[in-house]
Image: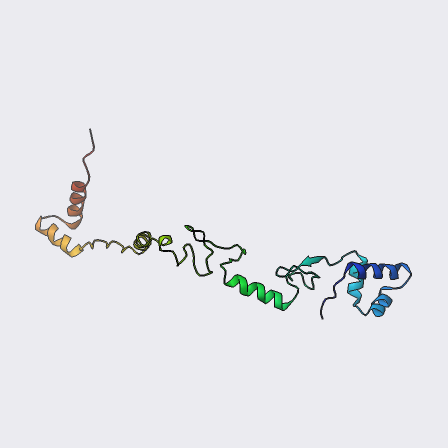
Length: 172
């Protein structure tokens, strides 16, 4: 069931009927509106007039999320803004160099001005994010064991000696 909107005039009429001694049910039948709408009006809950975001016409909201007076205004608003770079916050995006209004698919630069797009900067950004990872050196244990046997040591002794050679001497 659609919610009945309460205008200021309807609220005054309901209040006048209530002060004349009529019950909520009688007012509901007389005005052909639901009892809940009559009770809301008696509590002072009047639906405010708001302006349509597209045409500016004042209307009473039927739901809490309503922002347009008609489907035609809602469609016109969304068709206009979908092609003119409006984001979720309904702020237009502009080219960071020339200030031209961008379409919704352009991020920073307009496509019509060559000076707005710097391929050198783009290449650096691409290389920074797509740099190949350095390969780790493979430590071949079998090779190390052969070298240790050739030196006449166990693997552990050989590795300890190798790590001592790689460490810098402590300053005295």
